[in-house]
Image 1 (cartoon, one colour):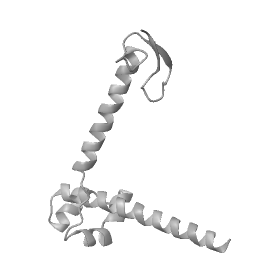
Image 2 (image 1 turned 45 degrees about the vertical axis):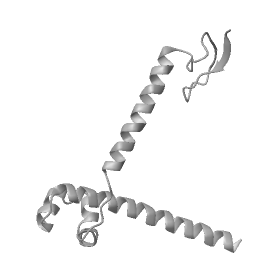
Image 3 (image 1 turned 90 degrees about the vertical axis):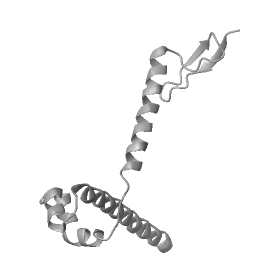
Length: 121
């Protein structure tokens, strides 16, 4: 028996009549779009896990002496790698860690200011 269902593709969610009980999507295009979204999300997750933020013995020196200049494009990562005596891939990982730390610090500051405002009310 035909059943009324909602398309499982996020963003579509159209109502359709399923000829078979195992049908999830209203059209083949919706099925493909949903599969593409799942595939893209999976690739992003793998990339993020490979881009492990590294904070090793050179990290503190990198942050103090080079990170802001690299961020502004004033010095290239390869040049920093040669100056410190490490591989460019390590500089890339340290810079990723620097960006994460910088973002977390900004969020912490904003949360602290927000909490102070709430206490003053």
